[in-house]
Image (tube, rainbow, N blue to C red):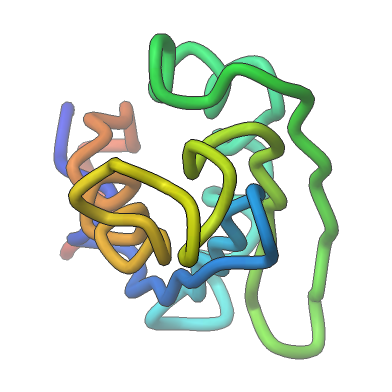
Length: 109
């Protein structure tokens, strides 16, 4: 079945200069491998096409059931110089959670 990522995880994001930082945390420990496998650099880069213009770094945090991303060249120069509406990258987490993902039909039983 296809569901929004928000059914499996919550997220937080913010700015690191011109890069956005986004952590995605599974609601349940057994869902961590699912988000870890789904959220590849390529998938995130495709999801943020036209927004993230630079490289993406990915970090796995299994003890927190989380995957963290640093999306370079995303914030138009950063908070103090950017003309973007979200110069601090606070909406990146919400945008990430809107990603539709395929999960087994039995996941929510």
